Length: 78
Image 1 (spheres, helix red, strand yellow):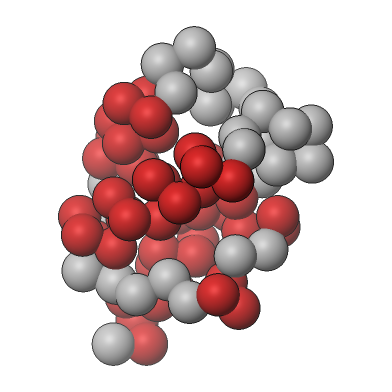
Image 2: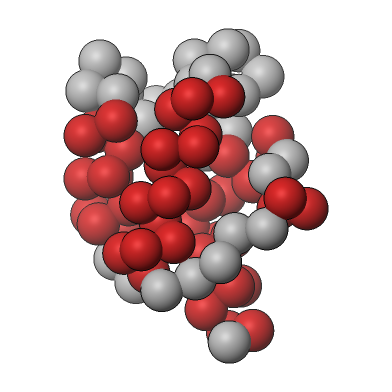
């Protein structure tokens, strides 16, 4: 799994956000629920994972690194 793939998806959803610099994407309201739904759908398809409702916590989406860790964990569980 490539960080560039994650960033590409994020930039397609929100090209106005500098994802590498942000540390509170959810807590600061930078990403809204619609953004998250779109991102989760793209992640599920691109990385062949299934992000469950239990995984939809701010801690998993506040940073790009957190998203990468979530994807990695879900891929290892498969």
